[in-house]
Length: 218
Ligand SMILES: [Zn+2]
Image (cartoon, rainbow, N blue to C red; front, side, top):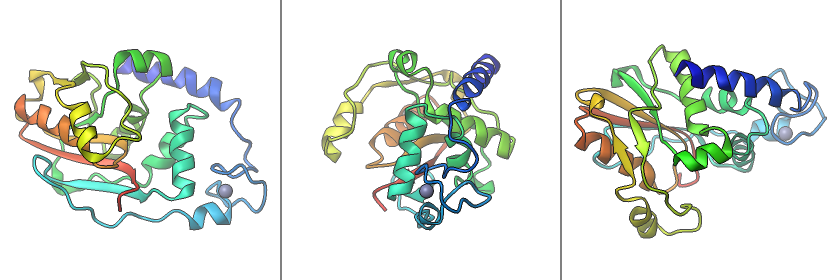
């Protein structure tokens, strides 16, 4: 985990050298009237907290930071495309891991190792890293693995998403008896998060929650 973190620090520094300066809006790059938060008025007004979402078993709690407005979609895409790693702490600041979940471990939703190699990072692991330091809860990228390459979920309906992702994860037995919080960037139908939760529960996790940056479904 330490190596993962150090590797990202190096990548952060390199990429941040190309990131917009302090006088451009973090999200839209507009140069007008940037506040101390690094945002223009239009983008700031487009950030809306997500109402408490409904969730199904096997999840035991679900928390989503923001509604998937235009500004949030731009921030999420910028994070995924590695434009600057500043988008990870930016989005993570809106994510909450409630105290009453008594979480033992944060676990980012994994991507396939080949995808991670091509992209250079897993955006959910970056969010988990910041939440781990914010809440002093350890995180692990080694407990839950993506074992099968799947088609992108984008463009698929709810049923196809469930079928596409089924049995594509593997959980290490070390998750046994742990209260785990899954971390992901976008919660659409929840198919991925539910499949991860199912996999962790089967491997013995005692409780599984999820915390996501944004959702277009709410
Ligand atoms: Zn803006």
